[in-house]
Image 1 (tube, rainbow, N blue to C red):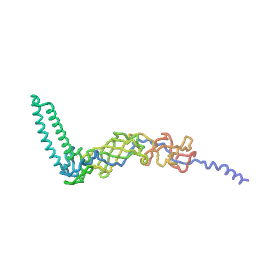
Image 2: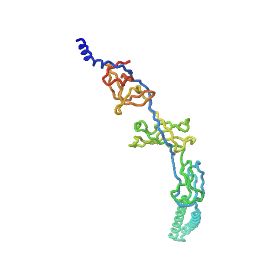
Image 3: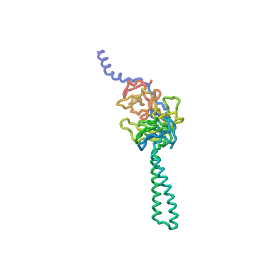
Image 4: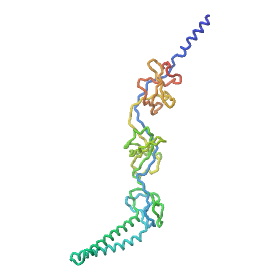
Length: 330
């Protein structure tokens, strides 16, 4: 009889044993002042690039630049053979000089009534035609003289003196490297944090001591469907021409400081790609709370949404509890 009574006692009181409080570690979130940082790989581009070509087929008469050297705007780079054009110019110039003398004489004779208006008009028309012809010859000769459209550094040349060059063939390329463009792709989550004139710090992985500041000058309005990024173009002064187009560099963006909640990293757990915390309520029971996380710093994780300053966040004993569990905070 006593044994049966003891069995009933154990049977009915067994559930109460399973509801014994579980010891956990819990603390209120820390408040830290932080600023978002964004590090991006980027590529350097010349501020301006032009391929030097010709619009006519002709042999190269003389080359006036050295490869890999600085040239000034409007500096003569290439002379093409122009002997025939120069000869035609001398002939037309002589004809124009004679026509202008004849026109001067005709003006004097017409003022005295010795020639008709028709003769004077013919002399004027001939002079105009010869001037137009001379302008045409000068334009042709100018096409045979190729100058730098802006100041910059020349690349290698692809032709030598005496070579026949055809329209579209590239003689050399000029790069304006006094300023450099920086091209980078930014994750879409930063679309509202980066704008034109946003500052950044550029570092060169080849030279750890090198640092320079720049600004964002262009933002591509399109976000790429596959990479979920958008393109930006920045601009820097290339002091002492240390940097070269094509070099890979790093950009650092520092955004405005803010105060934010932080909890220990082991307090956050994920289910179906959603982040949660376990909170201890006023009745010492566990409540499961969905949160939005941010950056990670020194073993702590930022909580952007879903947490209050007075919440008790469980960081130890998470694997022993679930929503509704009774707990004791150690």
